Image (cartoon, rainbow, N blue to C red; front, side, top):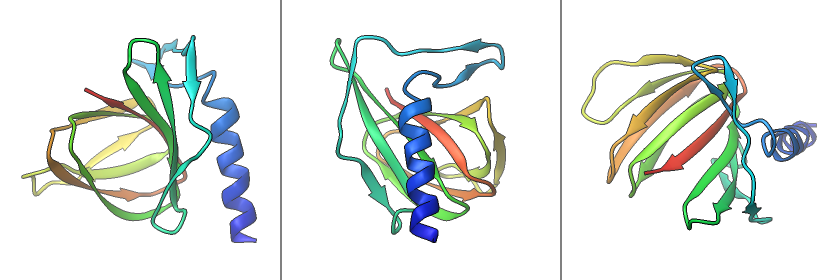
Length: 131
């Protein structure tokens, strides 16, 4: 049953988030055009975090994905902008001792060559831009 739920959530992300990606300051919806999407997904933490890579004509890329409730630590080589499109989590950024509450429509920056932690409270959709 748990795998069935994960697959339904993944299908939701793949179809819906290709059209409606995120809220910009809670008002303007974004849409990506003229992109290619890699069919093979990225899966972390036994499938609790998954994403798809979206490639743009200018060579840039983003990943669209979801996180199931839980606690995770991520490492990044490139600087990232993490836009939370729906859901609720707390993030602890590098060199910080504080957890910051983030909800759908909000975002946070992650510096290059660092690690950050998240406590995902509800199923959370995200768009990660590599800066």
